[in-house]
Length: 110
Image (cartoon, rainbow, N blue to C red; front, side, top):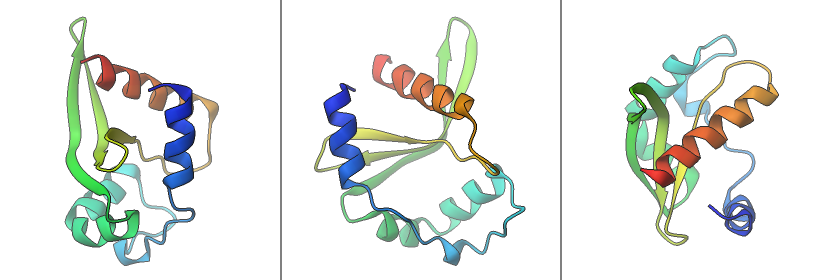
């Protein structure tokens, strides 16, 4: 996705998202949060906004015989682009940005 599309997407995204309905505590791991989101997908999509569609969970991509899995994949109907969500429990680390960029690039190149 060209950088200008990233800026448009960021401008369209809500901040912050209120996910209290998931019932996940501070010590919850990524898989538990992901499971809660899928279990409450209707409420989660309402929180994201009316222009999002759920594509899948743990979406498989194979590259050179290696398997990779996108945590959650959505499609933004108005912008006509996919939105890759990789959940992380705990503090932000720069490596998380690299992983997200890698998954986004893989999805676009598939």
